[in-house]
Image 1: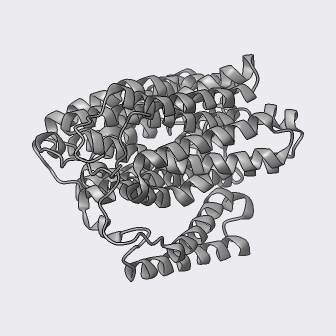
Image 2: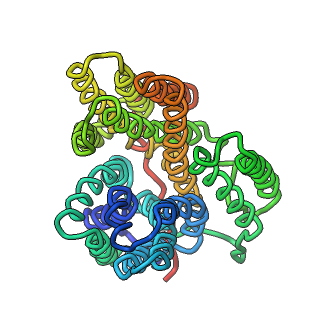
Image 3: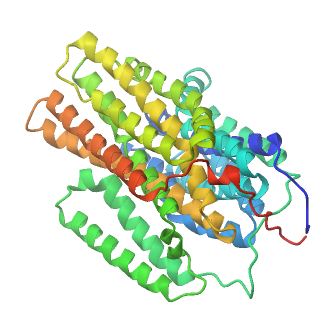
Length: 473
C-alpha cells in the first residue's frame, strides 16, 4: 500500500501496550513464583534460575538484530512474529511438566520480547507525529516502565488464587488481543536499495559478545569476580566487542550502524537510559535489607515500594507535558536528579526503625517520580533523533541498554551488598549497596547535562515529522 493516509489510532496504542504487557507478564511475574514452579515441576533451583534468566539473555542478544530486521522486513510483521512467539512460549510453560518445555518456552519468550520492543516503538514513530507521537510513547512507557510493577502485583495475585500457570494463559490472551487490535495497521518499513543481505558474521560475533557479557553480569557473583572463569568471560567480552566494532565498520549491511552514536542527543538518551535502569539494583538491596536488618516479611517489604509503582504510572504523562513546554532536556535532568535523591535517602540505614520505614516509603515514591518524569522525554529523544530508515535498529539499541543496565545494576548492587556484609554489619552493607546506585544515577545525570542539547521547545512537537515510509503491498 503506497501513499496511505493512515494515522495512528488509540486502538493501535492499546494493541501495542498489550503487546508490551505480555512481555512483563512472563518476565517479571516469573521472579515472584519460583517456589511454586519449583514444587510443581520438581526441578532443581539452579535449573529454574537458568530458565528464568534465559528470557532476558535472549532478549538482550537479539533485540538489536530484531530492530534492524523490523526496518528491512516490516515493523508490523516483526511485531506479529514477536506476539506469535509469545503465544507459543507461554503455551509451552502452561503445558510444562518438567525442565525441557520450561527452558524452550523461556527462550521463545526472550526472542518474542526482542521482536516486540523495537518494532512497536518504530510503528509509533511511523504513524504518529509531534505531540501525538509523544502521547503514544507515554502510553508505551506506561506499558514498559510501569508494566514491571503492574504485572508483579497481578502475577502474585493470579499465582496465589488461580495457580502460576494462569499467568501465562493471561499472557496468551493479551498477545492475541494485541494481534487483533493492530490487524488493520498498514505495513511500515524502511526504503532500501539493492538486495537485502543479512550480516551473519556480525550476528555471530555479537552473540558471542552478548553471551559473555550477560553470563558475566548475571553469574559473576556466584562464579567469583576474580575467578578464572570470570576473567576469561571478561577477556572474551572485551575482545569480541572490539572485533565486532572493527568488523561492522567495514560492512555496508552492518548489523549495528555506529554512525547513530554521532548524534549526541541519541547517545545521551541511550547512556542515561542504561544507567537509570541500573538503579534497579536499589530494589534488591532495599528489599533484602528491610527483611534481614529490620525484620520485615517479604509481603511487608513489597508494600514499601507500592508508592514507586503508583507514582511512576501517574507521572509518565506529566513528563510528556513538561517536555512539550520546556523541551526534553529539563525533564530528563529533573528526572535523573529526583531519582538520585530518592535512592540516596534510602541509604540512611543508621536511622531508627519507624523513621527509616517512612524514609524508604518517601524514597521509593521519589524514585518513581524521577523515572516517571524521565521516561517519555528520554524515549522521544532517542526516537526523534534517529533517521527514519534506522528507527527500528536505534530503538533496539535503546531497549538493549535498558535490559543490560537492569542486569548490570542488580548484579553489581547484590555483589557489593553481599561482599560488605561478610566483613561488616548488614546496615553498612545496605548503605554501600545504595551508594552504588547513587553513583549510577549521578553519572546518568551528567550524561544528560553534557550530551542532550538545550531547546526552548521539544523539536518533535515543533517540526513536522516526515511521512511514514511504507511497504508496497
